[in-house]
Structures are given as C-alpha cells and as structure tokens.
Image 1 (spheres, rainbow, N blue to C red):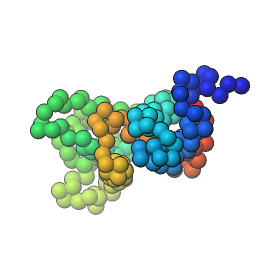
Image 2: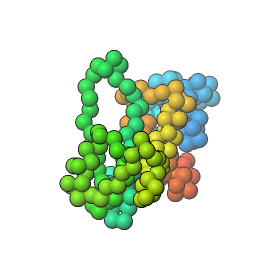
Image 3: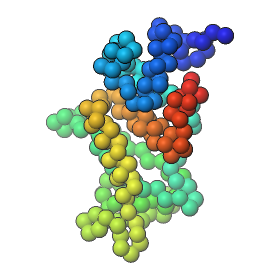
Image 4: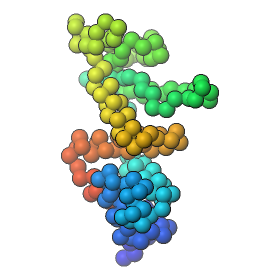
Length: 195
C-alpha cells in the first residue's frame, strides 16, 4: 500500500513522519513557524501553507449548513477582525443564511436591516444594548455569539493577528476546533479520518 497515493499527502516532498508529526502538532496548536522549523525541520512557507490547508481540509468535506431551523434560535452579531486602512479598499457585501422557521436574536444595530429579516418570514427578537444586555421582559440576548466572537479574536491576537487573505481559513479552523470540543472528539483522529 502506498501511503502518498490518492490522498492529501500526494505530491508532498516532506518526509511522511514529519508530515504526521506536523498534523499532530497542528491538532495540539503547536505549529508556530519557530517551533516547526526547530522540531520538524520545516520552512516558514511550508508551515504557513500547511496550517492554511489543514484548517480547510475537514470543512471542505462537509456540506454547508444553514444556521437555525424550526424551534432554533440564531443569535447574530457583527464582529470586525480586519480593518480597512485609512478607510481605503472596497466594502465587501454581506450574506446572511438562516434555516426556515428560525427565531433570530440580534442587538438593535441598524446594519442588520431587520425589516428585511422580518419580510423574509423569520421571527426576530431584539435587545437594545443602550438600555440592557438582556431584555428584562423577553430574555432576549446576544451574549452567546458575542462570547464566541471574543474567543475567536482572543485566539487571533494570541497568534499576533491574521493576514486578510488568511482570514477565511483562520475562521474555518476556529469553527472546526469548536466543533471538535462540542462533539468531544480527538482532533488528531478527526483530522486523520478527513485525510
């Protein structure tokens, strides 16, 4: 059986044992360029490329899911990871996708165009952070999603930020890692199954 045929390792010039060690280290969040250069004898470029490829690998094998659905609550909140320098550069369009029948909790930020959400037939409940973080009458809040964004940003800062062109793979990795914890899965085993 050839280990590098018809799989993720095909075409790689890295020794197979080093590749497996890298994947294990990636799962344990030990893939700084300095660490990998010293411990695995890998170049900066290889480490960056493999970090980006691994975090997208498992996500590519899964169908995209809508958030919410019948009897589900979807909290929404905006979060800025990368700023435009000097207000230059294009503003990217937003795309929100929710499952039919979702109840959406949001703060009262104008950018959500909540009238469009209601026109589409979703149930919408808002909390106005000017007055409360949890609506005293309805219990509506956005604290769960705000905490999630806080965790993603903390991790991003720990790694000294993310280049704009790597943001999607960074968020894919964050989502993947959150899912592994939620499902109580072994990251290394999950990644090997994806390969």
